[in-house]
Amino acid sequence: MVNTQEDPIIIKLKSHFYDLIDTESGLFHYDHIVNKMLTAIHSLLEVPGILLYKRNEQEQVLQFKAPMGNIDVEMFPKKIDIRSIPDFSRSGAPMNRTSLIEIEGNALMLLLEKENQLLGCLIFEGNDQEFHISEDVLQVFANECGHFLAKIQELSTVLSEEKLYQQLFRVTEKFHSSMSMDSVLGEIIQTLQEVYPTFTYYLLLSHDNNNNTDLPIKDLEYDSENISAMQAYVTGTIQFEDSQSYERSVLYAPLMGKQGVYGVLQVIAPNTVNFPKNEVEFISLLANTAGSALENAQLYQQSKRLISDLQLINETSHRLNSDLRLTETMKYMSEQISSSFGAEEVGFILLLNDGEDINVLQGSTSFFQVRESERYIHLMKDKIAKEREPLFLGDFHFPDSTEEKGFKSIMAVPMDQSGELKGFALVMHQQPYHFSFESFKLLQSLIHHSTLAFTNSMLREELERMVVTDHLTKLFSRSYLDKKIYSSMNEDQEGTFMLIDIDNFKKVNDTYGHQAGDEVIVQVANLIRKNIRGSDIGARWGGEELAVYLPNVGLKVGIAIANRLVQKVGNTTNPHVTISCGVSYWSKASITDVQEEDTYSALFKRADKALYIAKETGKNKMVVQKN
Image (cartoon, rainbow, N blue to C red; front, top):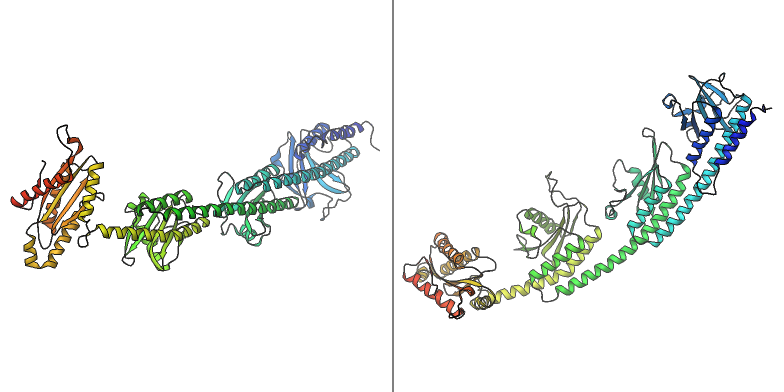
C-alpha cells in the first residue's frame, strides 16, 4: 500500500501530465512536452537537476535526450549500454530489482518502464539515503513517467504521420499545378525544411538541370564520394550510407518518373548511425511524387523549347533566304545565337584552299578579330577537319596548358555543303558547362539549315565582285570607282582622289616581257591594297594606270598616303619600278556663294593635271593640284 501522505506527489504528477496533453489546438510538439515533463518531475522530486535518457531500439542503448536544472552534463555519457545496467539480462529484459539504482559518483538512476519494457531513465545527483520519497511511491512515480513517455511517443508518431501526409498531399497539389522545374525543386526543399528542420539535404542533379543557385543543388558526378548517389540514380532504388565516425546516416532517394531518373535527393540525418525507419517511407513517397512532377515539368518545358527552336529556325531561314549581304547575314546570325544561347563570343570561320587557310567572316563578334582567337580557331579547325563531327566541350583546356582563364564552354559546328566542308561556326562562353546539350543540338540544326544560305550569299557576292573587279590586279574596275565617287560626292563631306602611273612601263615590257610587266602591275596593286582602308577604293584605271579614292579623308592624310605609296613602290618592286602620283581633293566646306559645287569631272581633271606635272618634272613623286 502506498502511504496516503505521499499520494499527493503521484496525483500532482498525473495532473501535470494531463495538462500537458493538448492535441486539439495543434500545438503538440514532442520535444516541448518532454521538456515540460522534466520541469514537473524536477519540481516534484526536489532535486538540483535531472538528465533524461531514451531507449534507442536500433542500437540497444539509452541515449541522452535532454537536461533540466542544475546538473553537470559533462560528467555523464551520451549513451548507456542497456546491458551495463544492473539486474538486466543481455536481451535488455528487466529482472527483479528496484527502480532506483545508485551509479558511479553521487548520482541515482530512476528506470522508466511500461509493461516491463525499459523506455529510458532519469539521472539526478544524490543518494538513496538522502532521497525523501519511499521506494513504493518512487516505483509508482517511475511507472507513471514511463507510461506518459510512451503515450506522448505514440501521440507524436500519430500526429507526425498525419502532418507528414498532409504535407505530402499539399505538396503533391503544388507539384502538379506547376510546370516549372525550379518551382518543383523549391517545393521539395521547402517541405523538407518544414518536416525535418534538423536534417541536411541536397538535390543532386545533372549539369543541364542545375539552374537555380538559391537551392542546395550539387552536380551529380561519379566519384569515390558519390558511389551511393550514383547507385540510387542508376538503379532507381533508395540507398543508405551510414557513418559511425561522423555519427550520421545519409539517405539517397532517386527522383524518378515513368521515363527515367531526373536526379537524387540526399538527406542527412545527424546524431545517428542508422537512418530513422519511420522517415524513410515519407521521403520515398516525396521523392517519387517529385520525380513525376519533374518529368511533367521537363516534358512541358521541352515542348515549349521545341516550339521556340522551330520558330527560331524558321525565322532565321526566312531572313537568310532574303537578299541580305553576307556581312549582314553573319551579323544577324551572330546576334541570334548570342541571344538564344547566352553565348559570349560567336564566330563564323570560312576555310579556303582546301582548308589550309582561314577567313573570319565579318559579323563575327569582336573576339575573333584579335590574335588571341587564333589558337581556338586552329585547334577546332584541325579537330573538325579530321573528324568531320561537331564538337561539344563543357570544360575545355588547351593541351599541355595549366591556364585557368579562357573559354571553357565551346560548341563548334561544321558548315557542310554537298559533302564539302565550307567552314564552321564557333560559339563560346567562359563559364564551364554553360551550354546545355539541347542548345548544342539546336545549334547543329540552325547551322545545317543556314549553310545553304551562307553559301548562296558568298557565291552571289563573289559573282558581284567578279563583275566589278579587274581580273589581273583584283582591284575594282573603273566603272565601279566612278559609281562610288559619284555617290561619295553626294553623301560625304570630303574626299581625296589620286591617279597613279607606273614610270617607264614600256621599258619594262621591252626589257623583261609583257608577263613581267603584268607582274609589276600586280605588285603595285597589292601595295595599294595593303596601304588603304577597307572602305577606300583602289581601282585599275587602264593599262599601267591605277587610281585610289579615299572617302571622307582630308587632303593632308591623302598626301601622306600618296607619298607612302611612292616610297613603297620604289623600295619593294622587282623588277624595280617607280610611280608618279597626281592628287586632287574636294570638300563641301570650301564651297562659297560665288563658287559652284565641285564635280567628279573637275576632280579627275585636277588629278590628271597633277599626274602630268609629276611625270614632266622627274617622275617618282607625288604632286597635288588644288584648283
